[in-house]
Image 1 (tube, helix red, strand yellow):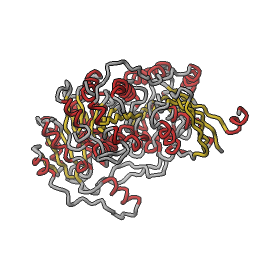
Image 2: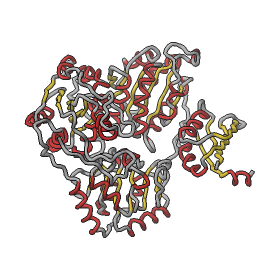
Image 3: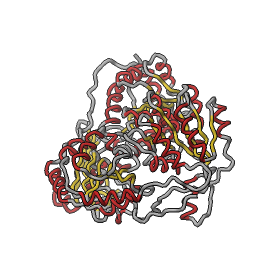
Length: 550
Length: 84
């Protein structure tokens, strides 16, 4: 058995059911072996989309996503996806072809040092120089990607290794260090802080979903009765109809959420890294609070805010130990008042499509078996604010890297991972053009993905910032010469529906929910619409700007 | 202010680059480096002196996350001298 065939068999043994990739010179032996694979290979139209599709699959299912590319440009096209997965802790195994070992380091055709250029954006990487190493490398790669704090792992595979025989010998794996048990003394300190607190608040991050700890977290919340805020990646950890959930905090967070963080006297940070978009000006973030920080990654605890109790390890045992009732009714009443501060008014003036209202109504109608895959920009923030998520994995969003072009390929991955779910990609006219070629993948595999495109003929979030923080000087944000997106979709064989009036929003929602097969809904919106509220860069979260709706 | 890190790592291809990359990315200046393989060649022992000593334990946590790194010990410069 040669290395390529062994790799295919090894992926099967790992339980892989689908991979996303694009062939090329040095990876051809693997593609030849793929012809006999028991799993499906999805041919995307750009390697970046392979990485995002694998991410979408992983984010939606919780399983390891796999992407493949050839050496050189194929490998470099994966780099943004690796960075995206790294910053959002997504389990990913990326396989790149590489020139043969005999010419490694000679600037051979399509040779780049992909290992060297990705050191800082992978959890680990392997350059496989001997077929004998393949069994160990594949096992370690999958284990590393999924264990502890998940992340991307790169396997760089020279062509001659693919063609060499894999000797049938056992190789001892190196296992990653298991997560530490929480320190009982620190647990006790955390319990004391919680009992002494008059105004405690849970700060829920994406780590809750990544750890599969949602049930434990919700049991903890039910036992303590804590009010909560969530980060962008933490949306869904708390059900959106929870009366004590104050919403997303941070730059585009809800007013009530940011005020509650400012006023609390104890912040229980769970599976979150206190990202700068969430905290705002750090020295004014939760100024009255002590902090309990629970995370599997010791490097995140204390990175931006020194906690009074640092619990490093799996979330579940920590949450179990802190699940006891609290008497905080006056604070809960305050939080209910904060929550009322953040209630939305969807009665916007004007006859045009209002994206927040459309998303809110879509959320009400779509049900929990719907996955929303976002691109990046104003629409991403409107989704976070106005769509009610009830479980992690329901929202696929590029949080840490903020990568335009993520949404459609991630939706493709989710559609393969959760074929019994409805998948809707919400995008903008800037973002959709970053990976527009993947409409061909949707059509090729007849995926019933719905695309909701909010078109304001500009790069809306950049325009908003130029309006607010650069004295209205518009620089390279106008996209008035966009293609006709309906015709473009139809040229890929995907039907399209165009809406531009408020009274058409209901029709659009019906079409999104009831159409068989893929569909593009092209919604024209006011180019001057802004995302509110907004914490200006460098300001404290309580210094929120709010503007008039147009 | 500076501090010293003593690192025991698997002697794998690229391991030193990975360690130095973390030091650079986490904004520590490298002041001194000593590295030598263990007698059996399976491991490498590295001693780094880096600046920004008030954040040494945080850097060590990032280094500990590298798969090939087995142990990281942090010393303030004064402590290292007294042990030396």
